[in-house]
Image: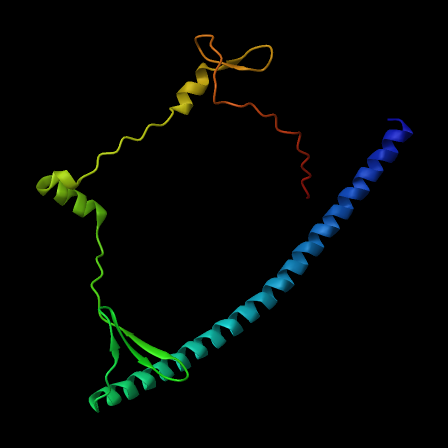
Length: 170
């Protein structure tokens, strides 16, 4: 090997070592940050749990006091879906109970197929069998995509990926 190649090779080796040190530093700093992040996440969780607990206690007290006032004759503004108590500091809204429908799609579909087929939508989904179709394609001299019958294909664009340099550290 000539001296110039040896010098360039030494520079590449030096840069690989620099990259290796940088990688080690990155791993160490991520570890430190993850430890700190874990600590702050646990603190945040604890604060949030205390907040939610205190909030539930206050809401329970408000509801209990509201019940007492209603027993003593307080009339609330009412609509079909809710009742409202207005105060200077804010409104207390009591949502009326509602029915929530939870359905098992597969079970319901089977039931409707047998009993009420008019409520079953039939949908046809068209898609391309790409695995088989791409085997029939080729390229002309200009780089256009040609199908198995020699016709140009629309709807396909050919892009070239750039070369990628990968350095594996040992």
